[in-house]
Amino acid sequence: MVVEGWLARAAAARPAHPALITPAGSWSYAQLLAAADTGARELAQAGVHAGARVAIALPGGLAFAQALHACMLLGAVAVPVDTRLTPRERAQVSAGSAQVIAEPLPPAPPRSGATRPRRGRARAQGPPGARAHALDATAVVLHTSGTGSAPRAVALTYGNFLWSALGSAAALGLDPHERWLCALPVAHVGGLSIIVRSAIYATTAVVHERFEAERALHALREERVTVASFVATTLARLLAAGLEGGGALRCALTGGGPVPAELRARARAAGVPVCLTYGLTEACSQVSTTPLAALASGEDGPGPPLFCTRVRIGAAPGAQAGSGEEGEITIAGPTVAPTAAAPDGWLRSGDLGRLDERGRLHVTGRASELIVSGGENVAPEEVEAVLESHADVLEAAVVGRPDARWGEAVTAVVVPRPGTSPRPQELLAHCARALARHKLPKHIALTSEPLPRTASGKLLRRKLR
Image 1: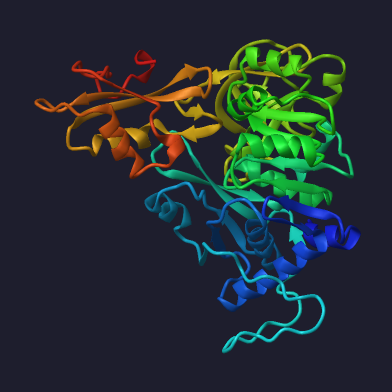
Image 2: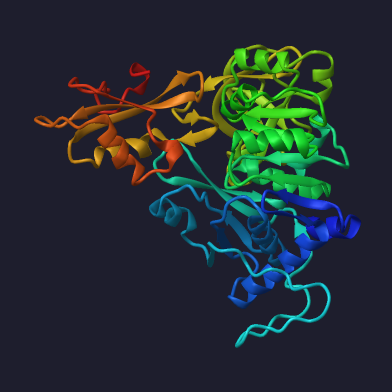
């Protein structure tokens, strides 16, 4: 199925409406389309074609949105790269890309009068590509650290994003004057989907390069933000900074890991409407969300699966909503990445949960050993490999331990080589040279005892938590 291009449709319907508001400036939909057109021509002249991968190593903002939509106009596949990664990690994510965008693309020419093309490069005439989207075509490839040490690629289609946007709107409602605050990394599905769904809705995305409590608080108070996406850590920081309900905010979508009951109680006392959400990259962000209507009746617990998203517990096909049995959360529906589902069409999440008698999804833990710290996924094997590359480290284990601030704190247990005495700060500095900041251990403990392992030598992390 082919649908009209989202950006072109939004620009035709609401040309003067703000598409993006950032600390560096704002663009209307007409301006965003013009910038994307210019960027698409630039990419086409560089040899980028439909289906080619384009790595976008830019922080969230106008330049990122231009590059993303330029790829979509061309039919190229956008590969967002987390700018917090080290050069080695960026190279891993960018591998196989026809082009890497590490600097902003040229701006759109002034709307009045012609512009002279740059010397030696003829500027393409007309639209660079079809302004339509085939729903089964890959739009974006995101990389998520699973339980392995290498980044894992997830290919999301235009259809995945469209159905996710429709499901989100069914749960939260859709205000034509929506302003959705994005203070999450745009290289992750939670942040990226805000920019994409805002184009689908022809509403406004308020995009910050990174989370800064005072800047986010100002946007919530002064910029008529109606919906915001947080993780537990950032919500806690905003409440500590004085966030209160009222004003335009109708929903603070909070997920990316456990949301403590104490934090929800603080938000409720401050009048902040929190909608709990559970999702993952392979399901194009949200899987279940507290419906906005539930908040009006005083509920702030988990919600049911999104519209057209199916959830069952465990592998048994006969598992029914409301059985109350805990098991692995499996997901099916049009938001699931085609290559992520098993042959039976169901996505195994690796997370544990249950469905109550009202069909609400309660997430109770993770079957995998993935650490979620401050809403960021951390693969313990990757951190262990870096620690064990230090000359004074014999072996290392990394686990997530409950933490009031981070949800889970990345914690390392290190066995030094005989005759050595590495200091925790020295090991932390060693990690910082190879790992992004959110992957760094919050605590490093030294021990002379061997790490617990199975008879086959497999590390028993559960004994270290």
